[in-house]
Length: 279
Image (cartoon, rainbow, N blue to C red; front, side):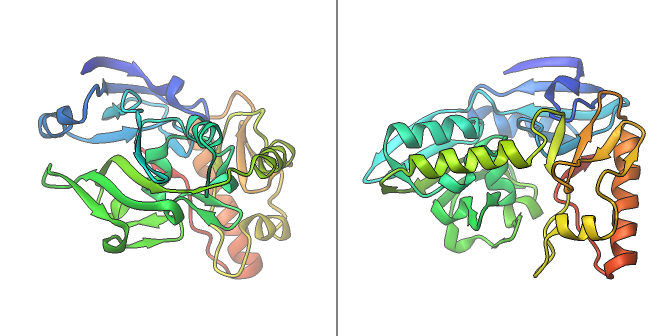
């Protein structure tokens, strides 16, 4: 393992907001994890920082990076094991190179495989757990175990893994043959055209309430384009908060609170955050 103290977390934030952390640990193999978690307090697993808002003051937290756990193992017959630290874009590329189909709709989602599994990430009607057979985790008792999908509670942008604060080590996937290259190109083009990828952001800020789209509720409440300090509800995609380069942690928190208030007053619907906030 590699241990760095008083580490600047801004470089690990897709929002480009983050303070100095007490400690940052890069894990080199999964056997190190139980010891790391036993010997450190206030641990937080950080991936690409694509859906986590970090405080820009001192963070009394030990951040743990699994980026070195990024191997893909072919298990045969369309089954592969993927470690949690693999960048999701590289995973999609591997699918294309090996003619594997099943998660093309998720192409272009930033983050790591572990991050998407943690929250059951998805897009365009597809969720990552649609192609998962089992997940290897480190549980609260610091035991490494494999749990089949059938024995996991999974919901929209929610998993038992997230609720219990387990650490994802890897996942076993099952794919069909027939990678849909044209669909991937179409999805990626949609993202580029409809999302403010050119600016620091954290992806979708709010979950879609059942039967509604958060973006539509934000527009109807008159909150699209709303700006507080350097943080703004994007004009390109109303459910994205973007940073003009000057946004602070408090700017983003205040903007989230104000948008929730405006939507509640307009529609009676309480928006629920999709992003994680680490204070």
